[in-house]
Length: 495
Image 1 (cartoon, one colour):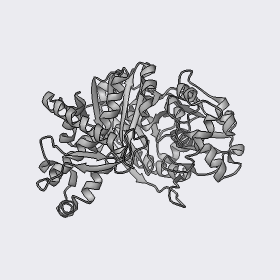
Image 2 (spheres, one colour):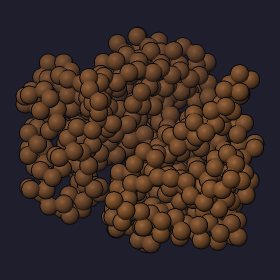
Image 3 (cartoon, one colour):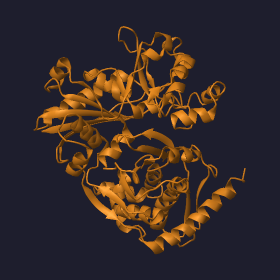
Image 4 (cartoon, helix red, strand yellow):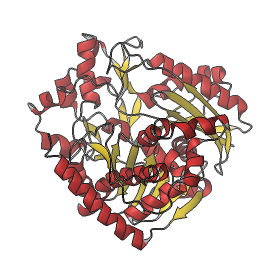
């Protein structure tokens, strides 16, 4: 018995087959390119994404030694696919990286007050939200909204190609900025204002709901039996939190990859809204009694990659010739004690930057080593994320434990730094594909393989290690964090 999770990303898609105990039975990944005709323009070609998904699913199914009993799909948010009345794709999909349309949110506030939008949507409006993507698409391809008879968000688009019906889940619907998270229904008036017929929208259902079965045609193409339940895992961060076993209020997932992101579960809607001052996003979670409060820093793992490619260039080339991984090798020699360096980590800017968009390394001397700088980069990025974390706590939220996933979670020293700064236990999981695993778990629950989420988590999610906070180091880091904040406050006054 096997379950397949499909994680559709911005630059590639993976399909992973899991056993009912969490063992990876087969896995396939394929990259695809975004279309870009000018700087800042990033478009997805839906047909290419599906063809890549088809290839990885077929290859994974062929390599899987067990019968497949469920398929779950999650994807990046905001992007969608437009179809005409005959079922033809009308245009490309705009990606979250596309920088066009930054002036569009202001037009919304002329009709709908900002506080009203925040109250029903759970988010601070940004140009990447789906309704602004729709307005921009109508400028790029005039008349496209008028011709649109059906819309699928990206994960639902893939499921529809496999035999799924015209549904979406709450987490992807929330990314539109035109979904009422309290009433769990579309704001038809917002879409009418944008210029889209609301009848083109998919029916919203809870994340993890069964939205169809594998069609006979898709089954024949993929080498799988028809009738396999198809499930929308929704937004990839939600799926990853499920795959990491984060399912109770007070638990938090920290995904540390190219982007450094939080998903905090809370049973209080008001906490999520209060934290919006720090640009949190508030979404219904898969576990319906809870909500997900989400935010991210776009620098994230890019900062450590910058260190590797520039400061650690010699070591990178040396270890590459030895067939060794830079990050694994550098961790062995990096500083083991807290540094007195202060890294301002916004090397790529910041989307909200309450203290300004500056970056730098302070307190360096002639004795400073590369190993100290590398650790300080981890400390500085952790301070950046601690600001969000601390604001959530001050607004009345609760965090009892933190589960880390992604590339950063493979570095034990980094995980101890996070635990010491945040002053909570940090655990890492055994599976390094939590998004696909979450999709597979939700598919297994929908297919009846697991009785409920508790059974799925206890059967599949394995804990690799738990890092406990050190009280003395936390005290020291809070002194450093105070300096970090005061430096940013000062730099905000420097023009």
